[in-house]
Image 1 (cartoon, rainbow, N blue to C red):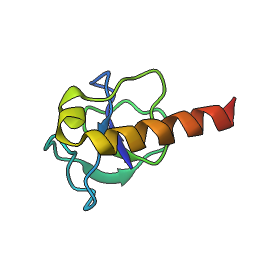
Image 2: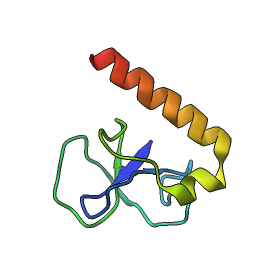
Image 3: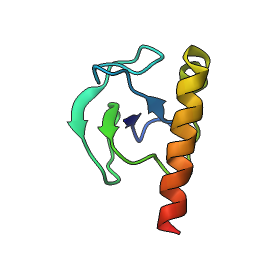
Image 4: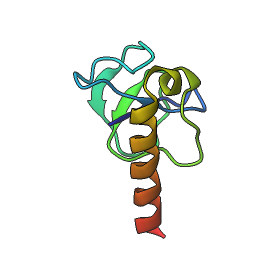
Length: 80
């Protein structure tokens, strides 16, 4: 699961409880799988396109980052 807001250019990895990102930000417990204009972090099942991963999330758990990047790439390849 990923978290994204329109106020930030990067996306975040979400903890198993889906209440916070790996870097500790609070996530609104709504899944929105379409572009929206929101300053709050919300959940999304699809990896955000044309954005990078939050550097703090990447620092917290390198193995999760590798898994997320592989899942994101697999999703993008399937859509091509």
